[in-house]
Amino acid sequence: MRLRDVQTARMLPSWMREDPCDAALASAIDPVMRSMAEDLTLLTVWNRIDDLPESVLDELAWALSIEWWDAEAPLEAKRTILRQSDLVHAKKGTPAAVESVVSAYFGEGRVEEWFEYGGRPHHYRILTPNASLVHENLDKFLALLSKVARLSSKLDTVTVSLEYRGSLYSGCAQRSGERAHVAMPRRGHGRLRGIAVSETEHVTVRAAVGLEG
Image (cartoon, rainbow, N blue to C red; front, side, top):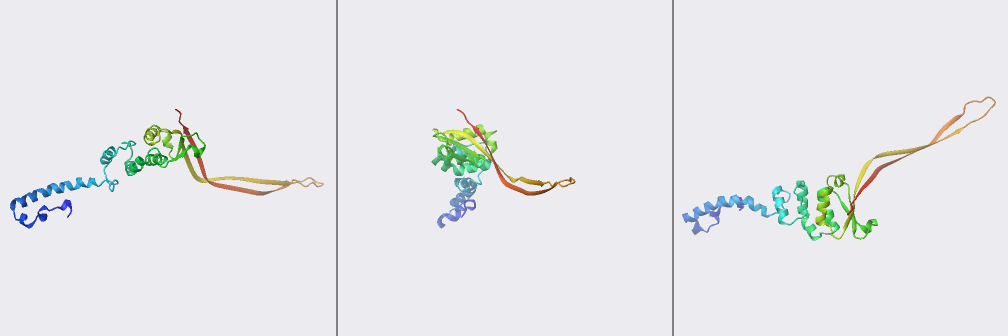
């Protein structure tokens, strides 16, 4: 029997069903129990993150002490942050935690540690295809980053990789000419030969923003 369809009288032993007071009490309890059914469904949180309203998500983030929570973030980003909160809490201060938060709020992002690009010890940089991260969202990004990154590490740059896929053509040509001289001068003749054309389809442009301090 589902709680929203509960009939308390049917659960009473036979000797109680015959008592008018017990029957009346059971009948009065039913509406109360049914009204609680919807509220009780909120107790099953983790399997309903995709269905919970935004106000409940904000309350849940407070209850779970998600310091990197952004109340103004899009709804889907909030759902992602909640789903990954246990992972970030467990791995706080690691590249995996930083990448999780960057990806949830700003799309794809990757952390490179100093030994991967020849930087100074305990430094790192972030690679992302989201150009807005180094413009209007930079301050917000750095504030969120301070909540999950290792305090002993220093961010060198935020590098934006922009990729363009299309056709870029280049070519070259070789021309040779021959001139013959006879008793009566005449115009020479030429032949065009050796034309080569090359094509590329993928161009990557990177721009890095350095951080001082």
